Image (cartoon, rainbow, N blue to C red; front, side):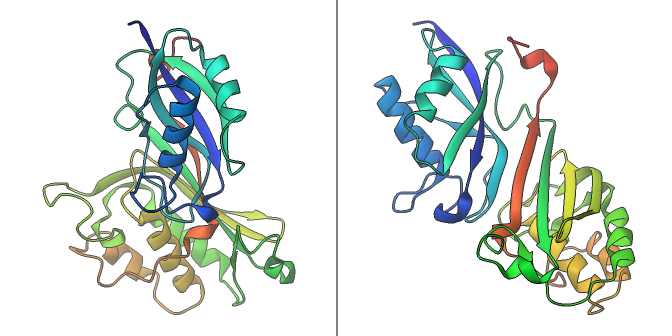
Length: 257
């Protein structure tokens, strides 16, 4: 049977999900998407994600790969899914890809944003589910200096959950940019890299905020980039303020662009 390879670009509210990866007893984004695809296509359709977001993490650019019967165009499967998916998941775009496309292994870059609210209104129920409410003064210049330290290729073993990557993995990630930007009501940390380790962005944000609060030295960030484990890292920032913004692939893999 002829088949199409399709990339789905997902938005989702992670608040009611136990992360991306399918689990037996918990509600997950992959599980919701596969269940909906099975109903729409009248057959099981495995879904491969670009990465596994944690419980509570949101996305406005998660990528997933599926193989579908040729009758399904990217436009028709997008319409059918958006008419059937639960309200906390939405397909923003769909593209036909070369058959060798793999949502995880073909990715060349991923981008995340972490949102911090610093004004009084950040405690509003309309914002605190999407932002980290920060009540302590932050040294803005230290945040900028800390972000500059991260840029480049480093071993991020000191910023990863131990045991989630094979010991043979070098834990090296190439960070294209890392920056703190001002936004109405607070700040946002933006980062793009070729890969991310488990909890890496949240560990980075938690550590940088501790530096900006005056609780640890800026130099400790550099020491963590050569550390053999994560024992000296600060606690990870909460998941609810983290967004997966974008996954990039080589243009040559797209058939309909």
